[in-house]
Image 1 (cartoon, rainbow, N blue to C red):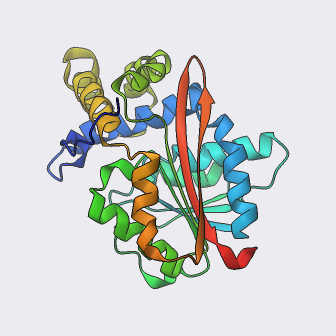
Image 2 (image 1 turned 90 degrees about the vertical axis):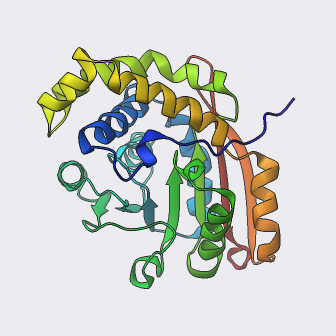
Length: 265
């Protein structure tokens, strides 16, 4: 039986959330993706998307702590492939982390230092680029999510959406083996507010509690295949769409959904 989608709140969506708390969760998630090789099997679908869209530059929306963009670029190079150039954006930019990412991968990574709302993308950023939304599409309620896809159809060369789990709270568990160590190590590995993050993580249950709650709620917010196709059905037939799954250890199953212009063939 399929669970109904629930637009419950996540702490990290709250504008009033202190940066030390928000960063603890976001930085730990990026490290979990890297340490757990969670996105490795996503490279295949992502490569097909790039080939179908013809994109050489990607506007990475909701880039967080740079995890998805840097990991996908690294995994593609590890596989002997040339990644696109990722231009990272976020409503809460993390310029210090993004600067370090760009310094490590200058051919693949760049960023916009100012806040960018994924629902209001400036024309100069949209022009000529495909879009990625990795592990963040569930944050948008249905009307906003559909508007985001509609804008991608109007003004991008393709859009690639991925989530690390399906709508099932049990699907959050495969991330725990790397997620817990990532969160506990974060105060030592973070580039800013280390003392505050240490207090939140080691001396109180705040960081762990928020990470668990937000992860649990995320699984209830994820869109199903049927819901995604229903969103794009009114957008005409100028794009073709594909949905599928990818795997990661020990028993994780993520999803991807992408659209590319039919004119690309």
